[in-house]
Amino acid sequence: MKSLKKKIEKVKAQYTSSVSSGPGTRPLRMIAHDLNGAAY
Amino acid sequence: MYSLVGKEIIDTQANELFEAVASQQATAKDPYLHFLEYVLPKAPRPASRKDFFTFDAATIRSCISHFLAKDLLTDMGTEALNTSPDSMKAGLEEIKKALSLMKELDDELHALFTKYIHTLFYHRSVDSGGGSVSTLVGVIWCCNRKNWSTWDTLEFLVHEMTHNLVFLDEYYHTHYEDLSQVELEENYALSAVLKTKRPLDKVFHSLVVGYEILNLRARFDEPADPKVHPPSAVLKKQCLMTCESLHELFAQSPGLATERVVTLTRKIEEALREKNFS
Image 1 (cartoon, rainbow over the protein chains, first blue to last red):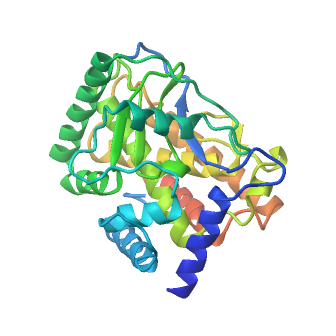
Image 2 (cartoon, each protein chain N blue to C red; image 1 turned 90 degrees about the horizontal axis):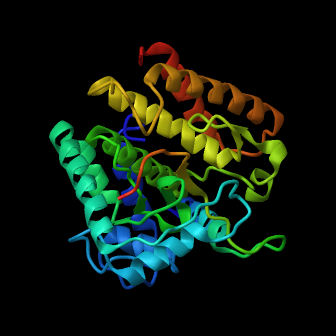
């Protein structure tokens, strides 16, 4: 459980901590692109 | 992840994740929402799990801001367009039809979806059919199109659910040693869905998504004119090319991905070579 908590904290920090070289967090955005067809 | 590791492992890992942060301070009573509140404190969450379709303008605005946020791992952005309440209603009606089809075909898959996806909203976008983001685990932005069949929409839902399950798997195992290295273009690999060189995280996700879509079709239906993903023969070929590209990357930059990513990539490749998906 202790090591799992450590992994959770690592991933949490990877996505929520500020980084020095960029604008902030690093969300792994997954978006389906280049789709044809009208939206609703 | 459903075909790749199975529902039992997904649930076991999730329960252990929830248990690991159970003593942390958070207001949500539901164990999943409590976990998300702890790991993603800035993300909007529903008050309960009763209704996961949202029309609330403030919630949708807040969710979209996560998709539009600038960051260092995004190689492709998106844009939101004005969306009327009638459009939201019409778009989500199609999502409901696809969810009914999912339940009819595979009750276990539907149970997994309704357990790990807590919010769905419809909003127009320029060139995106929708998406998921690691800072909003459990949320799906739907921008399904009028020319999609119910089966296409079902593939879209399985696609986005897979992203969310991979995010949860990442909390359990960790997937990347150092995201500042993942950002570097020299560490890009070939994506299975978009067929372009993209950051490792997108590529690994695309491989798992491609594998899940191939399995879904193998079990139920090979669409004659698929709108969301390529025909299975093409998708399988692209997935195998992605496996090859990932193996090259793992050899070139051994510290980039964790053992979990390497193992799952190998497992997918073996299954792709063994099974006839087209």
